Every structure is written in C-alpha cells, then in structure tokens.
Length: 255
Image 1 (cartoon, rainbow, N blue to C red):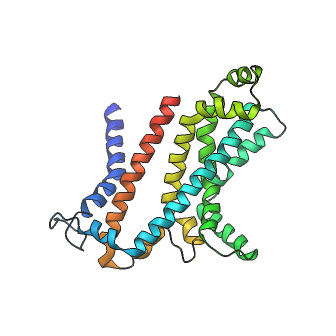
Image 2: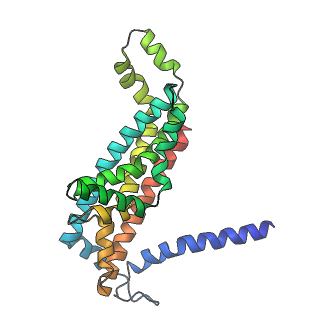
Image 3: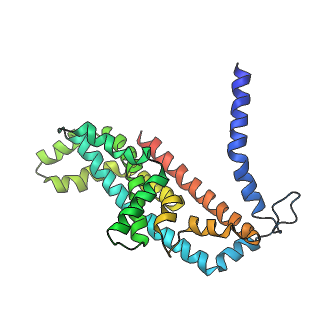
C-alpha cells in the first residue's frame, strides 16, 4: 500500500509540475517552434520582452492593480479579522461566512455580474474596476491569513496597554499592529500574487488597459510570439513562487 501511495504521489507531482518545467525550458530555446530537441540556448526572448512597449504597459497596469489590491484587501481583511476575533456581536457567524462567499462563486460568474453592474450604472471600465473585482476575491484570502494571526494574539496585551493609559488608537499602533505584522506581510504577499496572476476578472473588466495575463493571452493567437509568452510565463511563475514561499514561511513563523 505504501508503494501505491508513493507511485500516486510521483504521478501527481509529474503531471502537476512537468508542464511548468517545460515552459521554463522552452523559454530558453532558440526557436519559435515548441518541440524537442531544443535548438540552442538563448536569452533573446527575455530581451524581446524587455523591449516590448505593450508588454511593459501591461506589466505596469498589473503592478498598479496588484499593489493597490494587496493594500486594500489586507486593510479590509485586518478590520474584519479584528472584528470577528475581538468582539462578540449578533450575526458574527453570518458575517464570517459571507466573507468567504466570493470564493464559492465561479470567477466567470463574478466577472459577468460585475461587468453587468458597471454597465448598468454607467461606470466605464478601467483599472479601478479591475481593482474592485480583485478586492472581492482577495479579501477572503487576506481574512483567512489574518484571522488565524489575531486568534493567536492574546487580548491581554491590548488590555494592559489601555490600563496603563494608552488610548485605543495608540494601543493599536504600538501593540496590536507590531504583533500582527507577520500576518499582515504574509497577507500582502499572498494577495499581491493572486491579483497579479488573475486573468478572468481582468479580462472582463480591463477594457483598453490590459493586465499582463490578458496581454499574454492575446499573444497566444500568433504562433511566432509563443516563445515570448513562455518567457513571460517563466518570470511570472518564478516570482510568484518566491512570493508564495515567503508568505508561507511568515505564516509558519507566526504559528
């Protein structure tokens, strides 16, 4: 039975990670054709990516959206986590459940619904509408990270600070915020990664200001640009993996 489980685990990891390894390998191949054997090692696709103005514009859009979403989602998640862990109020369980409802909805349904709302209200599509859409899916992740952090923080520290004469706001900045900082940083990294990589909502809500994933998708229609897409995908995979590893290490430290 142990050998069967080991074999299953090996197959699982091969199916999951082999395509990622192939993407990175072909991004260094000096050929527009994605096939074995590899022709020669080259960095020209990465150089072409750095010189593509449309790509740089899409990257700038993704950075603006991801940074803004990470800050707003972490702020919202922190307030929600403090409310549900520090206070007892009617409807607390319902509020907690409602925070995770966006994760239960298919992203396509969420994108269509938001697009319909923006069109009916006369709001034009822009980077701001993408940020609003990303907030819906990133805030639950932020809340999930931060609620575990605040659950592990004893409220006695805050009570002691206020007993010594500190007002609630000063107690938050001098006691609560430093103690919760590992969770906050972890939330920022996680929500930044999710927002930066998100495609479906950005596809529905970005209009003429595409994000990097939307730009990559648009280039897939041209076979000669596929190596450029592979180079971009490799960079996104590596950077996203690094951010997720850092986020998980911070979570393990706070645990």
